[in-house]
Length: 318
Image (cartoon, rainbow, N blue to C red; front, side, top):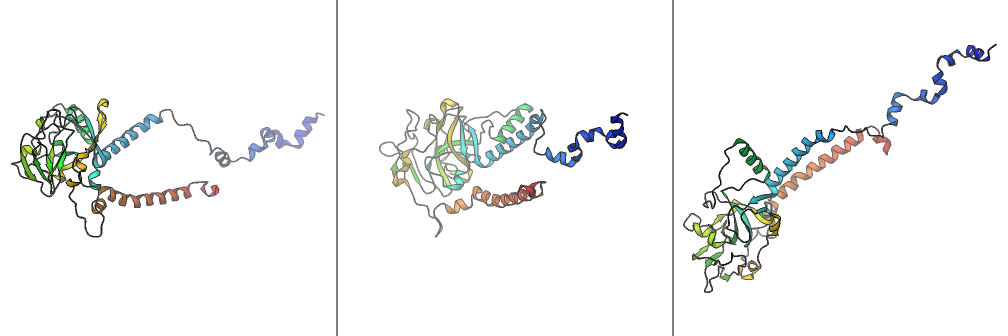
């Protein structure tokens, strides 16, 4: 007799399922066990996933640019020579739009302001007529890189509310509250002013002048207008603090030391019991933003904790 045949006769089940006898461990694995064993291995991402995510990245980048332009910083193009040689025609400067929510405007600051209804345009800007050019200009304005606007001006603050600004003293210098200014930023060969004036800056307004005095249509050119040539403080967009383009002109725009003379300062009163500048700080968009961000962060943290608890395997992790 064939011994192999006798074995088959005694154990017919073994002959019907040879795979089970050779790999008994495999038979014990359930589909769920096999899926759990591979849970630690990430599936390879499709090769085209980056291209699918690119539109999302672009949308996020544009949204951040709009937020930055609206609330924090914005680039401005210099269209005229009224601030030479501090700023050249074609320069692009970054303007801090938050700073004046944290502190008052200071003498010597270079500010960008909206001169609509108070200043006459210094340059004429041709509006685009081509639909594509219009769309590009609109988009550039949205993200803060638009062409220059006729209504936006950039000047240096000489007098703040309450200051008496006059020109000129016996040596031909500007004076603020009787203190003469040494103006190293003036365009070479320019006088502080060829036009005499003597004005006290009204509350809520500023006296501004260009560094290229012979080519600047500034507060002096509007002495007969309402406000006596001064600019409303609430029309100030922000403080220019750096030249970013072209690279060869890169420089910080700091205040000259002449504006630090002790005799210039006039103390501004804060409400009793509060440090100077605190009321402005508490009412600033930055402070309000922090106030709104705190509860949002708390809600997000709670959501993440709940998500972690509901994730399979999170209980075993502890």
